[in-house]
Image (cartoon, rainbow, N blue to C red; front, side):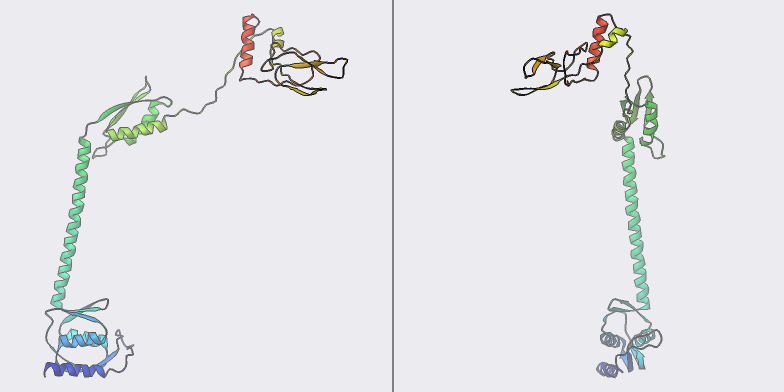
Length: 317
């Protein structure tokens, strides 16, 4: 039978498909087909089946031979499997592409993939080994650098306590042992650190954060002996006055100011003291004074002046 006759017979068999309903029997769900072929080229049959199913087809070069087929109302995918099995062929579908190859070709494909995976593993291992070697070289170069020594004076904390906090930050060798060292000079309250420059810079920053003063409350006390008369002279005269006359209102702030009544209806203002601040040592009461004086006490300064004056007079010690 000629090739054209076989192809025509295949097409005729496919035209006689009974609908496009999917078969529900077994594991195959393709639409039913009927084929009656003798000595048909297997590659031609595969092309026709794939085209009818709407799939792309890739056939290996070593796929060849004739096939005799007589199938009636068989699911399309089952018919394909039966034809492949008769010629010792296998299929592999990726998306809408159907690959057909011999079992030997499949074995070669699997071997090739395994070889590629092995090469990828070797390449990955080689890159990992290269990274490890590069890291070891950098470590050896870092370890070969000379160590430097710096001194860090401790101002507020105890040098011994800071030593405990800084020891974990020293560089270490390949065995995990500290390569640098920290010594304490208790007499000068100082740390002597020997390590690589980068580590020394890190320790310098840590020292700035750790060596800080502890917040404290400062209480100052003074014991002074004075006689009973001198105690009366201690103090600040606070005074001021607001008064009005017939000519208008007059304000007086600072110093001690008083007033005295007269025969007229006007109120006269008599200045008793004219200081910038209302301080009069000793504090004397203004005669006939009525009002309010504003003064300022500058953090014990006035009291210090008073005590110094009493000490100079021999009335306090």
